[in-house]
Image (cartoon, rainbow, N blue to C red; front, top):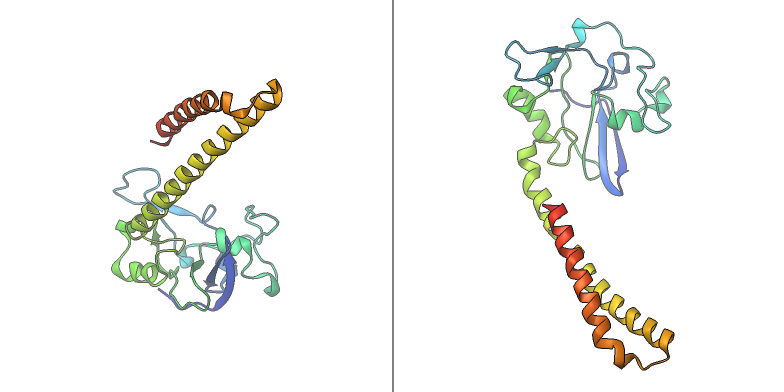
Amino acid sequence: MTEPALRKSIYHFGRPATMACDGNCRKAWGVSKRPSHPLPDARDEDDDEFLADGELPDAPEDPGTYEGDHAKPTRLDQRLNKWCLRECERSAWADGHDREFLLDDHSERIPNRYDRKSERQMAAVRSRGRHATTADPAETAPDLRARLEAAERRADEAEARLRELDAAAFDAMLATAYGAPACIFGELGAMTVRGLARMQTLDSDVQRY
């Protein structure tokens, strides 16, 4: 693990965050382009490790990857841009402004999988907290479950409100079309809307799970 050379407070998807890097753009290939080597006992094609800086030549000025209109920086004033945040293997981010955390040390090989990392390498990951780009999935799972449950509750509440609005709109449509009091069609319309809404709810439940 190593201390950041550059640090910047940003907003990531509307939330305050801190991004940092070791400033060694000369050796920055990007996570999708940095050469790697399969582990001797690799379990699948993703069970590998990034080669260390000493094993590699300097990275290309343009590795051929882009994030929006941002490419790998070629000038000092371009550093810590979108490419650095999302693509550079030498950077990381954590939730909250003015955060202090550690980075991966690319003077050694960096395994792709968490269970392959040394305890020293995992210390850098943990220092960033659960919202870091390389956060441990075991730490993020409870937070993600809570957010998913809250989103499902909001969806159910919105669906109930929509059914109410649909029933009222149906009554108004019939009254307008036939010139009859809404109360004559109200119950029939409400029953129809409730039936359709229930079918939609069942269908969404099937798709959700």
